[in-house]
Amino acid sequence: MPDELDELVRHPKTSKPGEPMRSHNKSCFGCGVDSPRGLHLTVHAGEGFTVDARMPVEQWMEGGPGVIHGGILSSAFDDVMGMLPRLIGPPGVTVHLQVDFLAPIPVGKTLHIEASILGKQRRKIYAEAVAHLGDPDRPVARANGVFVTVDVREHFADHVENSAKAQEYKDRMHRP
Image 1 (cartoon, rainbow, N blue to C red):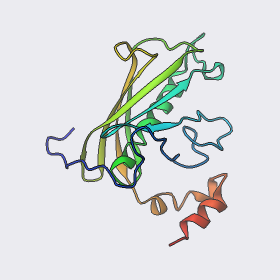
Image 2 (image 1 turned 60 degrees about the vertical axis):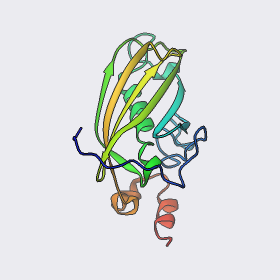
Image 3 (image 1 turned 180 degrees about the vertical axis):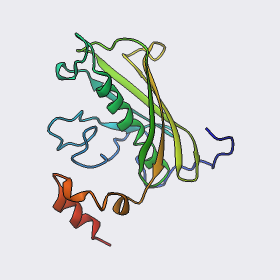
Image 4 (image 1 turned 180 degrees about the horizontal axis):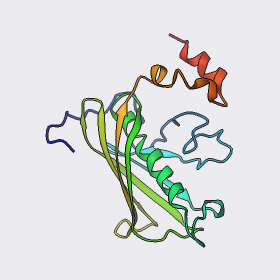
């Protein structure tokens, strides 16, 4: 992370602490309500520049026998940390994600993920997250990431056609 960082200011229109944050989009694998095979995460805004979520570790998420698949855990971290840019301004996309797997995460447990902004420099937002099974003093995984804020209409314009919600997004993109 760079030494010189921009001042963080919470966006006045973002969710208030304790409130759920709006999904990235309805079809988002992590937080979309219409994603048929998604994680269906509900991410809540926290105090300052933090968010948190809980995720039941279900049987379909299994990787090794009886434990979560690392890719599912990585997706959950990506989605939860991906909400952080909205606390301070426009949405962002992931440009770097690193996950440290500290302990097996059993199927049938509830995973708690807490994420925070470490700093911002221009369009880059530096974030970290920790996951635990109910005891914050016993983390089972950690992650850090870098997100870059984007103009959503411009960034996804060439890919909207591929979406299950293509017409809905096209209609939304052409609103003033």
